[in-house]
Image (cartoon, rainbow, N blue to C red; front, side, top):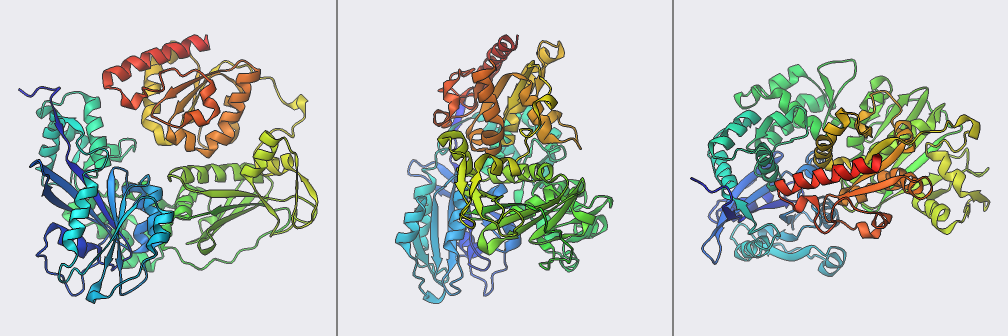
Length: 639
């Protein structure tokens, strides 16, 4: 009988090949797998993603398995990179030296943003021996993760041996390689591989685990999450539909999704499609029984949305017309905000359109690079100027600040999904010269906050009018606030709640805290508030502010995701920290992962668990004990 504590080292990793369409990515992947592979005169372009398995032997005799992910280069595929470009991976950027069309900066930035700065190789595909000069010094100065620049002619295998050796040298040094996994996990993994099917139900997965002596439900989910991260399968555990299916072959799911986006009828209809279209596109027996799940996968990737009021009809924003529709706009008393990016990944506006689709005016004023939203007698125009690396917002109507608060929250969520995305939020000047201008002077919101909160300087000069402008009013003009209400209108609030502040990227940990607190909530020992209690249709920003004002205890679920959230840093933490100083609010923070919390004011407050032993480093039993101790501390503080 298998000892449940017995382990086995993991020798497996993900190697991802990216680059422009037609650069030779597929040819490289197949040549790595088999050097004798005969190149096709015109290699068929990859639709979505192909996954190829390559094995080599380590000096120790141990077999190492590489999962090669070959990405389609067409722009329509770029938007889903964020779901597959992961940490614990090695990357290759392939450049076709004949075309000289590779934007090295763009691709290296994409890898840097989406993979936590994973190592990358540049491979110059020198077709017909045509060399390609690359400014290596400049690229290495900008990208510390660039490891090698190698050349090959795949027609005669020149340079291929050196490339394969470089891949081996770097991939075996990835941090997770050699990690000891429970042998029970390995048994389940092998059993999953022996399935010829593309997917199984989660219940079948549980049965398979139990049949291989893995009986703990949390361990089963931990394993499927690990395999998801490794690129072996897809299991979206927090999705209400997809959590019920384990996709055993990720390329099966992505191919199905891209069959819709590549469909000529859908393209001709500029992204519009129906359930009947899907039945036709997914009529193959491989897809027919999984149409609901595949549609949910498209929604999960923010590739489409259902048109409100038209059940069963959908729009894929990436296929919308480039032509901006005609509409009237009242340019008086506009509220203007701009986002500018040092590097702008593709797909930000498309994701925004999907998130905000219910507010699209008449469900007609939307195009590939822009959208007009309408809510509560207020309109918002949001346009992307990709070549200028900018998104511009302007709002008109009665409740501009409330609608802007919703819009900026959605952009915060999108921005926070990227590692190290550098952007600026630019606030318009409100001096007499600028206040009715469509091109006012703009100020970086971070600079304004630094003036107000750190330097205690409350005026800044407009470079257009040379007038001095009040910093606090500039901030208040664009941010939802009650500061302008007379004191008599502000009702005193009793602090009697526990407020949970967390990043939505840490949903799994939030769920564990909720579960642990449930007995205390049920017997009314604790009154807990979190953002899942915001009802659809309510003014979420005011709901959060009211909850902040009623907090007696604030629980901070601290992780790199938490610290990276601009919304938490700018809108949740300041009132909590101020209340801790002036009103006796108790702050309890939980270290979920190793993080740079010492660079923030959080370091001044007592952690509910030792920061040098964050929860994600503990075994399941140690985690359960830690949650009990944490909940007791929360209860003591609340009472």
